[in-house]
Image 1 (cartoon, rainbow, N blue to C red):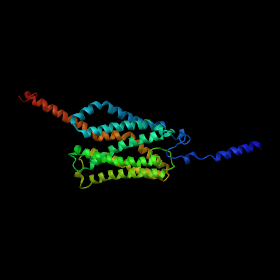
Image 2: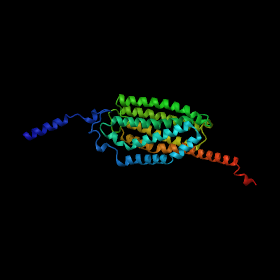
Image 3: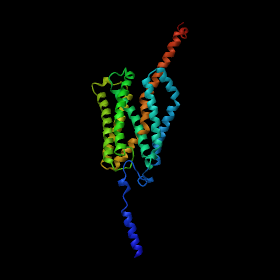
Length: 304
């Protein structure tokens, strides 16, 4: 009888222990909440890290050559844009490498700061390109890019302020997976974010296939970029809605779009926009060398 009574008292005390998952907010995650089963696995991290490492190595390998081309072009705006791309790539690589921070107690603030900075840099690149494509005078695009940077910085600044208020002020775990305590607010904010981007890309596609398409840049590669980004943001928007309603498939689908974005967006942006600019710089540089040699009389013998 004594053993039965002791067993009953132990089970009763365990049943009265508060649920750590239900009482944990966005700031104080206990070790019990972040068990090893809830951390991201090897393949998830490898899918993020490998493309990011390769892209950073590619930028480092061609850094001297690209900087020389940009310096020769004397466009401070393009130099600033390239610097922002490199800075965002390094931040994104750190974000991919430090995925374990969101599974480690006491690292929530550092993880939220890193996520906020990384998302802000990539968003600034994304909004700048959307504004660049929407301008009517493409010929003077490089000159207008300075004004576009100012507008993009203001938009990103407001975005950062709103996210910082919700993350650090209200404890909404925007950048932490697995926390369902404030999932309605979290998925509502992400839904608005993805919806605004979807509308922006959708408007560009609408103009492209309308009678006003002459106002947009005549480069098919730009619209392949827009179509891909429009599709990604539509899927992400639907995933946020499903995740907000409690569907597990929605959470999986949203994580899939996050992996695609962080592992492939920056290389995709570089190939679509900056690679063409560097090729044009090669062509202009070759023409300049040819003109200088022609003026010096190197080709006079060909006409004799």
